[in-house]
Image: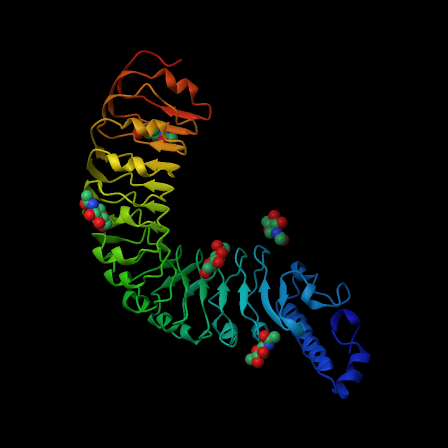
Length: 405
Ligand SMILES: *[C@@H]1O[C@H](CO)[C@@H](O)[C@H](O)[C@H]1NC(C)=O
Ligand SMILES: *[C@@H]1O[C@H](CO)[C@@H](O)[C@H](O)[C@H]1NC(C)=O
Ligand SMILES: *[C@@H]1O[C@H](CO)[C@@H](O)[C@H](O)[C@H]1NC(C)=O
Ligand SMILES: *[C@@H]1O[C@H](CO)[C@@H](O)[C@H](O)[C@H]1NC(C)=O
Ligand SMILES: *[C@@H]1O[C@H](CO)[C@@H](O)[C@H](O)[C@H]1NC(C)=O
């Protein structure tokens, strides 16, 4: 046994361990074991300087080491070190921490393949965040050998390739599955994922999947509050079946090739706060029956939408951002738009809006206002001068008369 900085047990403790009479000494034994395991993990990881503070000479209680969390008795349950520039593969010794439930290695520079062999032994792992690293290669076909307790799997923003293995759908405890911003291709296992009925967060966005329609069976995932399916080659219409997703707070399906109308239910989901459908081929008029009054951001820009801004949009009083630019919307811009207290970003440029702007402009929180490339007429309202927060104002390519003071 070498010096205290490499060992967790004092000689006195060893004597106690020979006579494990009281429960207290057993706890201490467990703690000593966990401490030794952490030191083994550190060593197997190449003793990176970032883990230098894992040292019993500095702090005897390993539960106080940065990034380590324990349950009672010194049992390690969480390792959390995001953003430490860790590069080497996750060592298998990590799973010698038998009660590890949470492992967060996000925002490091981990390279190599998904650390399957190392992590399959973590029998109680419930939260695994490997997002924002440089992991590459395909996911293993037996990824269902991860702990059956797995609830949160975040593999977002890596360099994974190949098909998403269908076995991922056997992790039936999953509440969040984030696979976005990788290089997954082919078809994803939509039918399997649609059986993960506990899912609250699902992100498949920003992967070069084969072009395919939106899977209507995702309508079974009625607990979803976050659905991110942008930039993944979706085509066809937004399924009517999604009207069952009434818990949605965030719906992002931008930058695809979606066609057809914006379904009425989209603006009737009372919990919806963020709706992004920009950069598709959506057409027809905007829904007129609007009860999604909790919307904070609405971005329907870069589509082929026609008709007027519905009067009912007036009820969207929490909107801070409304982007409808690059569509074929017509009619006059409703006066309420310029009296909307919370609105900060308003872009209606490149449409066919006509008529005069209202004199009464009280939307004093506006930071960005873009009305350019329409057919607006009349005087530029003096009221623009009162918009104290306005940083960028675009009015060019209209038919305004007069000047702006
Ligand atoms: C990670 O690396 C970057 C760039 O080399 C450096 O600026 C940063 O301080 C490093 N962070 C840590 C926690 O070592
Ligand atoms: C650690 O896990 C075991 C089962 O593997 C369990 O019996 C024990 O209660 C857990 N200990 C703590 C502190 O969570
Ligand atoms: C990864 O996803 C989990 C949910 O599964 C979330 O709690 C965590 O914040 C995400 N990580 C990052 C870096 O955003
Ligand atoms: C608006 O939608 C609600 C909920 O779907 C429905 O009950 C109501 O009849 C609709 N109103 C109109 C005018 O279509
Ligand atoms: C404003 O609208 C014009 C015309 O569509 C566009 O070229 C410009 O990028 C827009 N600027 C901002 C900040 O939205």
